[in-house]
Length: 225
Image (tube, rainbow, N blue to C red):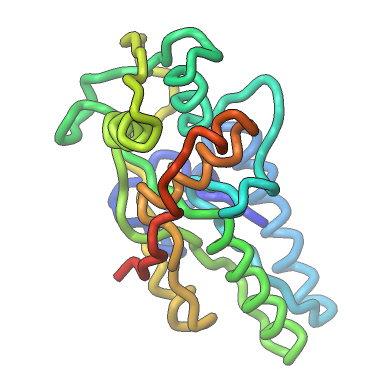
């Protein structure tokens, strides 16, 4: 697994794999170093490899049993859910003056089930003798911080308490994948990554009491065009 962080602050969106790779944090720099190493091993020894550049991984297994669970929590969707349920302080929105339609950052959220499916497709092609190189895993569509908050409020039936904070250094206004190469090479496209589906699955996974409070069935899975 690699990351969209290898691109740093992009010049244009959506971001193709050919975009300049200028990471601005150690996480992105480390992932890019590993990509360089894999490419060098391919040229020297014929290693077959793939670097799946995740955009914003989110969601959980639909039955709620497989999910992220860590502390400190830093991801927007679980933080917004916990704020809505009164488990954490109000959610901080880091900047509401970005050059986006509602002033908040835009990110490309990709469901973990779609990521898992891409891994299986990539593995099958590597085993068949194909080297894949870097592949963006995203939907090609972005959602703003405020759109995520609205989706959490809709799914939980509760307001998400928020406070506006300053921008965080290094946060680009918009990060959205161009996933066309993954579609072409893997025959893959996101099928579970509509924002309401991601949030519904994430809410269901947060706690037994949360799951019990949801009376609606999981939304129908839809292919993202």
